[in-house]
Length: 178
Length: 178
DNA sequence: GGAAGATGATTAACATGTTAAGTTTATCAG
DNA sequence: CTGATAAACTTAACATGTTAATCATCTTCC
Image 1 (tube, rainbow over the protein chains, first blue to last red):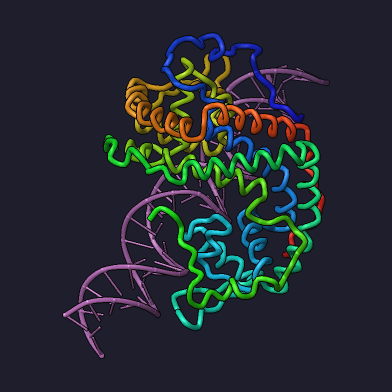
Image 2 (image 1 turned 90 degrees about the horizontal axis):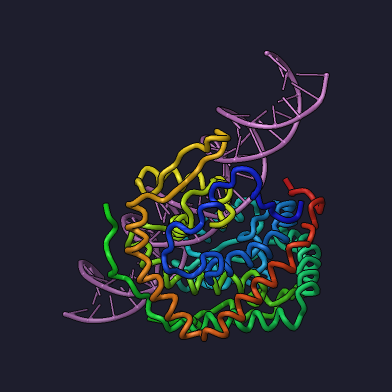
């Protein structure tokens, strides 16, 4: 049930012919992006069912969660805090507003800016989800170790910092072969 | 250009009213899922432009990359290796096949199973992208430190292992309020 | 003060993530 | 051999990621 089974039994063609093409590359499964992706998925797999039972996606939860910390916030700031791109945020806010979980108004001084805040209904929903969410987080912390978890987050943060100054290379690499 | 600016200047309404609702929760930006998401995005941001210049998305690249290591592989195995869900993989394979970057055939012993392999054109594309990709990876390794990078991957792997035995809780938590 | 350019937000278009349902082929009980 | 069950994909439907284009408002400069 828990682990993925390895179908190496009958007719596993791929396993028999594993020394054919050897491009000199890092092993695929240990590349940094894959490691980060798998780790994150392992974590989110724990949270998704609970969120889903409350009718929320991960991103919708992130937004409501961020809104509980402030009275109101500009859309752009919210995108930064919840780590969502503008277009995604626009769509989600439209949906959350239709469900009366948030409220919107235009900023007085600049009509381009939209101010967003969580509604009473939204707060109530948050309070309904939070206990389970915190419980899961506590279980993860206990399993992995609080100290190790803090260390991991420090290393992730350091990784972000390391890359923040990197100019995106290959911007004139080659053209798509169309 | 490089850093995000913090518009704390005129009319920053959110910043002034920061002590209103205080749900007793972890600080949002330091939650584990967010840390992992941001770190991964910081890494992928380096690769995406180069891939894009070759007409590939991140996932398409993962698939072709995985295919270079084997002669042929079953779809299910490919999904596991490239860490994609079945439906995503189906769509991408359809597209890659239409572009003649991969080849497909049915397994002789079991017509339900599809065997996938990379084409000559696909290999050529891989070889065109690989140098830039490796160069970027090397730059990241140098910036962050090879030792630290290995340590980070070990910790990520350990995190996966820790969570692999966790039963997904909250599966009967509550119903969506519709 | 009005046109040009900058900024905040949304919309458009396409690709993927995610869960559920459908299709085809195997396997198995009777 | 046939109907039921399972397995391997594939499709469907909806939500988000990603980049480009559009819209509305603001700022600037002449």
